[in-house]
Length: 188
Image (cartoon, rainbow, N blue to C red; front, side, top):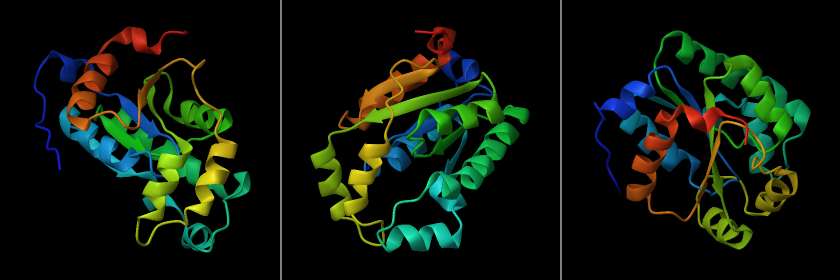
């Protein structure tokens, strides 16, 4: 497993008070990338899955896709945590699927313009294999529903797109540098 030291340089200082959502379908590596990015920023990592209700977790384990009605309160909890991190000027990194533009807009409304997204673009077949090999996770059959719901954020401001297959040791420094550049939040 790759380890990342806490950065103390100019890039980290430029990221003070930033909030980042590492997004993508299940299996894309949101948790792994999120933990590495938080460590590199000297910030806090929170897995959005930890904020799901027991009912939502049970629904996913049984092979049922969550509905928007299931997700709105969850997104509101994530948005509140993002806003709290911003208020504390603590870099905060969340792993959250954020599959639809409406979900990302809801998070933006809660967190404001300091919110950035890292989109882990992934191949459907590779994600089915990854998720299928996991224990105690949602069934691989739900990967299809995630790709069906995915609205790629390529035309949205504040989004950095990287391949889910990129090498972590190369990806994290690149992401820190991109997040430190204020131009990443400008309209495309």
